[in-house]
Length: 345
Image 1 (cartoon, helix red, strand yellow):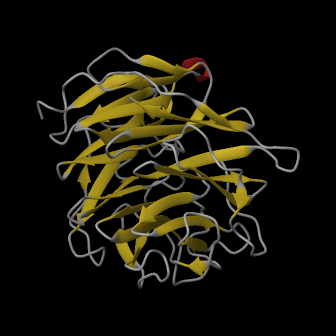
Image 2 (tube, rainbow, N blue to C red):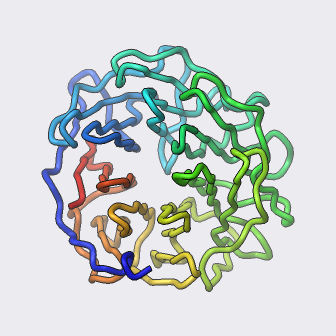
Image 3 (cartoon, helix red, strand yellow):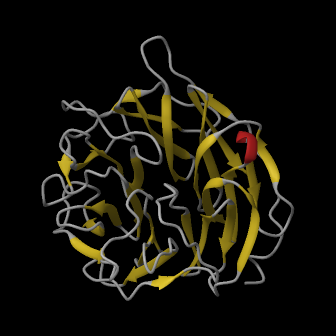
């Protein structure tokens, strides 16, 4: 706990801009995965899945390549879009097709040069048609979770891969709300600890409140412990804010960042809340035993904070930021028709 509260040095390495050429539409919804000096990014362009990578810690990136060769358009926008994870020698990308409502994944064993045909993760057709999902890797596992509509009432389901995305397990229920449904269009989040414990987070719809909840699994996603509410306050709202927040795991404990009304909240493992500022769409990552949160603030500025020092401006204009942690943290965000990537020092 003391180490986490040490002030984070809010300094940034070179910011790389990845922009479409004449043959691409806007690059949207970037998502990062990192393995040593290898930085991989998945994103949407023209309703298709694309990939680029850096072998030098994000200083330069390869040209964008298309991942999916299958017919159909992917879900994109408002936290919809591809997700990416690295497990062993595999890079795995997932996305949901608009026409079928199916969650598909692609695998590369050569650091993104070639990609396998798509494999479906949801074992009930069209169950993922809301288009919102999350994916994470850790301890030799890849886990994907999504908002599920296989029966009436939005639920959270998940599936596990032990072979780097080649195959997916039978789907298992993560959470069913006693109120009849969870929040209908707030994206879920998922992380896997170094010991293989899976943590899933979502926005609930319970008793008129739209608060964030988390549940964990110690049996590789076959079952989840009872869900617990995050933070100390509540948000009474008869609508979906379309903003699901993010979580990070430090020493096996959950830190989370999410929006309540117009405030961005950092919640510690003990439930203590810190209001970071006004805004939406927060992302969080842990690196070096500390956490960083980035969010879109009033006027479209991107702000960054560790919850201790005053927030700093990461970019004068940006949206839909994603963070990934580890030995170092990286950030990627939409910037006009392009996206930007930087390493947080």
